[in-house]
Length: 178
Image (cartoon, rainbow, N blue to C red; front, top):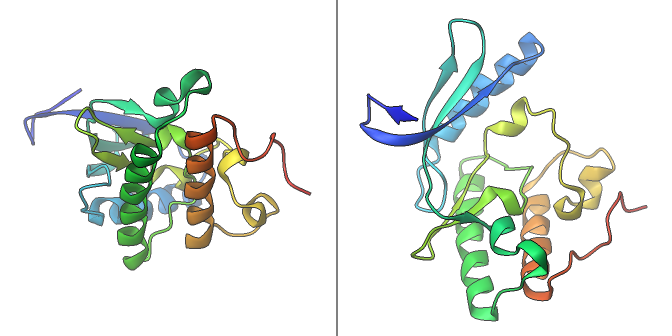
C-alpha cells in the first residue's frame, strides 16, 4: 500500500476486535508500538479504526526476508551472521523493555533481514488482538503453561531462534513442554 501522508510504501494490518476489551488492548498496544522508535524495530506510523469498525496498523514496509524465509528448508547460518542478527534483535528488545513493552510473541517470521543485513523486529502490537496462538517452538515454557509474557520469555525466544539458525533444527521437537 502507499501512504499519502508519509509518501512511502507501507504495510497495513487489518484486524477485527472480538470485544471492547480487545479493542482497548489494541489501541494501547498501537500507541506503544508507535513510540518504539529504534533502528531494529519496524516503525508503526499510525493505527486506528476503519469506518466499518476494523482496527488497523500502518507500518513501514520492509524489503528483505524474514528469518523464517532465510532458514527455510532446514538451512543454517554462519556463526557470525547468526550472532549479528541476534544482537540486533536483542537491541530492539532491550529498547522496548526500557519503555515497558514486552513483545511476547516473537518467532522467526517476525524477524526481518534486509539486503544490507539490517534486522527489524515486527509484531509488537499484534498480540493484543491476535487469535493466533504463540509459536510453541519459540515460546518460554512458563508462557505455554499459562504464565504472562515477560522480557525473560522474549530472551528465551531469541535463544531458541539462534539455536534453530545455527543447527537447522528447533531446540525442541514441538508441542507444549511438560
